Length: 283
Image (cartoon, rainbow, N blue to C red; front, top):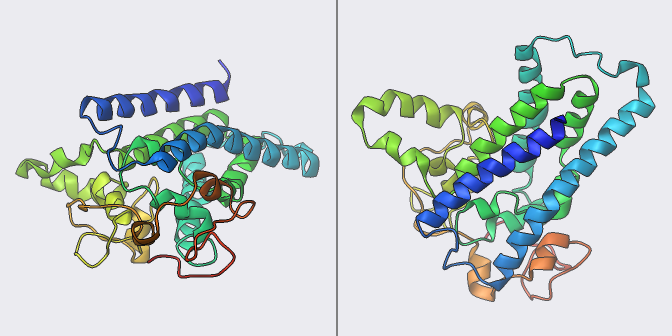
């Protein structure tokens, strides 16, 4: 079976598993979701594979044009070396990209991810289309595939997206780690190594002054180690009581197509980062 087919099927299986678990708990169809949310969640989930495949294909095509003799040149590398390069070229760059997206420079492309007033597998890919089209890690990954990372990249992305999906899911799988004292050492290691619901939910919190919310940190995607190393980590083992953006609470939700396609489409709201004026990245 083709590498990309296996990758897509495996990720769909993980999404489906968490989605069914959310349905069983009555959390998939969040009561906080409005019409714009529902449309945006569906549109982005359908569009993301096309964008990511398009970027990977464009990247490998550029490599084939620029350095054709290097195709498969690194295929003989040990698996651990390939994984290390992927963690740096993909996961570390995504941490930095995510962190930059919380500044006024890129916030309009990332705002859609935080406008949801709920946590769910539904919002895993919820970002502006250009957020992914310009993401450095995807372009670098295309080059690494060209150089021979192949199946190692497939396994890496399945593991990474399983962690990311789990960190967004309302299932809160990490809560069982905190219930038993015997698991305390394991919990300490896990929450400082990988993104978990508790740490990532804090990143999506509505407020930051309650000791739980921390949307100016906890940027990690696969590895939470980056937050620990760069001083942006905030660990409380608690979950925020509310999510979303305060400006949406005051002015109403943005249209789903504006959140998805800005700057091709712009908001008509008086106060917004998706219009023609510049405003603070977070309110």
